[in-house]
Image 1 (cartoon, rainbow, N blue to C red):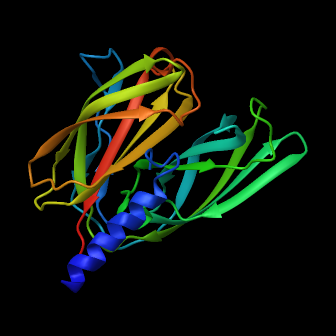
Image 2 (cartoon, rainbow, N blue to C red):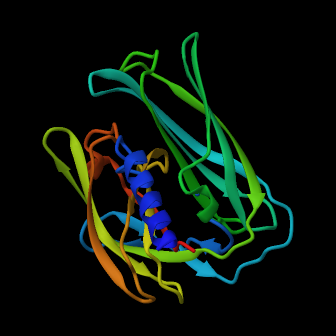
Image 3 (cartoon, rainbow, N blue to C red):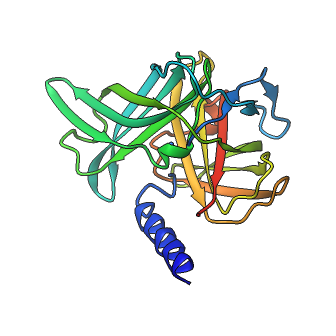
Length: 260
């Protein structure tokens, strides 16, 4: 009973944490690769899934950021900042991000924020592969609509536990009124064990392969090995207009976990 109570408390805590912008939404030890892109028959957008390989635990842990994007926008009537980075595992060990330091700049104004990415201990990235870190920051001192840049410093560690890897397919974007995009798709448990909670993230790129933004969301649902679930997520806190038209490539990944 105590384990069940602890589990329910943890779920409620996560639910509260995701209340703002985190309906949008880091994993230990598994390899991830992005195979050659395939055409999404529904949306006409190139979609690159992640695939799990055998884990490698030994070696050097290092990462480097490969792309960044930032926006100053308005959230609930107040200025807010959005930032996202793509990063690559440049070491020889599976890694997880333990800390991120984001620095937003607009002219002479600087906003710094240090944090641990959501569920970072579960987002394991294999050598040579990429993933994302995303931040929504409220009460900004930078006015909405201001041009802003982002510098990110990521701290990583070698991952020790395997990833419960999930597959994301059938992605489809639809722009809605007023000015937000809905994304639908399917999440399938590609691991040999069930999970009771999962996180899905998708990076959006334009036709020049520039990073437009990253969205993530979580769901508390039991997925048996091989089981799948369809989803629809409203990306109201992603400050990009007309995403279904500007996004030409989507890179997606998902992972699950269980409570002990």
